[in-house]
Length: 312
Image (cartoon, rainbow, N blue to C red; front, side):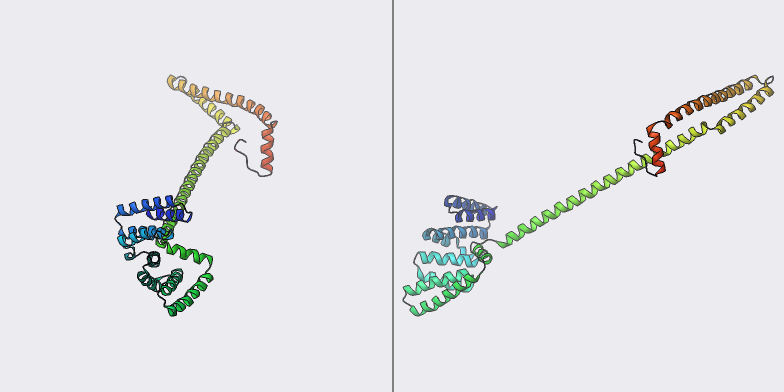
């Protein structure tokens, strides 16, 4: 949040929305102080000092420089030296300004060095050290040429460096975003695999249930076919004849046995009568079936070896 507020404040500054800029920087400063991070607090104070320098409020910027010692931090040395040099140039303390310009020549980036030589030209001119003015002028021109050769992207990157865009935090944010993407991808893959597993199990369950139902229907059909066959009728007739012989044999000897045999015979006779009735019904039904559209459809599919639909 602190880094984000700092960058938002920088954006407001570039839009010249001064009130919003200071308000956001103050919010970032309060959070940094609550966190107890002196390094981060100096970073934010350095940003505020840089804003004051841009608005030529050098006294306010100098108060921050002296109170918070922003040069002591590990933040962007080039940007802080640039701010210090600009403050002392603005307050016309040229001896201190020259000191920080000399430091900028050692530690500053190409933009800061160009500004340092520009300040040194002015300082030496004030001191009437014209020989140095000529040297610094050549250096200033040299760095001006170098800056012009830098591409637009590199120039933007260096400007961001002056205002201490912390590249480390951006890298952390990038890694966090990458980790979040990986988590989303991993979760999606696991979800898809779980869904596929459930789908496969459901299809397997339906297949097993269908096979069991088909086996049951097959056994029932085989039993029905047998009961509707002439073999079944002949077996019943043979069994009836055998029972009649037993009845005649035990008619005068065992009344209970004879009663039981007569009941069995009656069941078989009834079964044969039912067989004859069913056969007649079957003939009529088959005739109706042969005349139906579904029969013709199935027959045609058998001929061309095509499977039946579920409804068929």
